[in-house]
Image: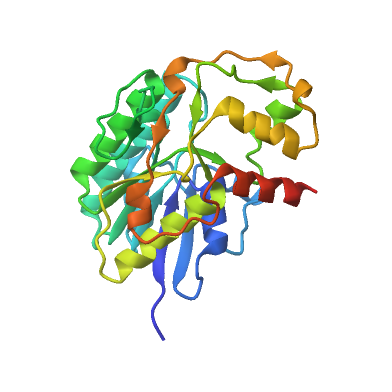
Length: 294
C-alpha cells in the first residue's frame, strides 16, 4: 500500500477546507494550521478531513515545530483579518518571512510549496492582456504586500509555485449576486473588465499542480488562475440581472469604481499545464451557482 503524503494547509480557511474535501484521502493526509482551530471546528470546517493544529503562521517556530514530522506539500492560503496595511502585512509579508525561515530547516523539505496570491498585484488598466511575464504595476497597499510576500517566499524556497487567482466566486462567495439583487451596477462606459474564477476551479487547479508535480512534471514558478473570458462588469451584471429574473430597469444605482481595476488577465499558462476548467466562463459558472441556489 502506498504511504500517504502529508499536505499541510497554512491559514486553512474556506479554500483550504474545500480542497481537503476534494483531495484523495487514500493518497494524502491533510493537516490544517490556524491560530484558533476551535473557530474552524465550530463553523463549517470539516473535522473529519482536516487534522487541525494550533499555530501562528507569523511565527517561524510554530511552523518548524508542527511540520518537523513531515510535510510533503505545503499550501499557504492566507486572508487578512482586517482591510488595512497592517492587516495585509501580517497576512502575507510576515507569514512569508516565517515560512522562508522555517522551511529550509525542516529535516525533509517539502516537494512542493503552493503560495496563493492574487491578480491584485496588477494595477494596470486597458485592453491588452496581462500574463505571467507582465511586470506588476502596484497601486495600493494590497498589491504591495502581496508582491513583497511573493518575492520573499520565491527567493527562500526554490520549490515554490505561486498562483495569482483572479476574483473568486462560488457557493458562499456571492457578493456580486448581492449587489445585483440590490440594483447596483458598474457604469457602462468606460468598460471596467472583471476577471473571475470559480472556487471549484481554484481547488481543481491546485490539486492538478500537486498531482502533476508528483508524477515528475515541473510546474512553472508562477501561474495566473482565471477563467477564459474577462468581461466588462456592466455586461456581466446585465447578463446576471436577466438570469436572475429581473428586468434591465432593476439596475438603477450606478456605482463608480477605480478605473485601474479594469484589466484583462490571460490564463494561457494555466491551460497549457493541462488543466481543463470546469467553469470556463462566467455564464457557465454563475448559471450553476444560481441553479444551486434554487
